[in-house]
Image (cartoon, rainbow, N blue to C red):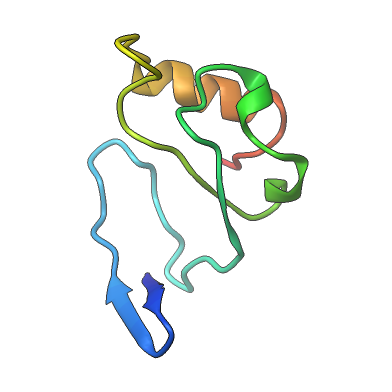
Length: 81
């Protein structure tokens, strides 16, 4: 996947372990920030059907597990399996 990182620059994204399978034809969509996805309300409605970008860690000193982040995003229909 290529991610725009500047006006005329694209960077290649690396696959993450446990991130699920990407179809051979790839995926397309706009990228929307869900912050830490610490709650269901962190993902905006505009990300539905697109790509949710979720930050590592959690707000302040609060840890948020990857499972919690994915669960919160999926609960509001933001991620597809």
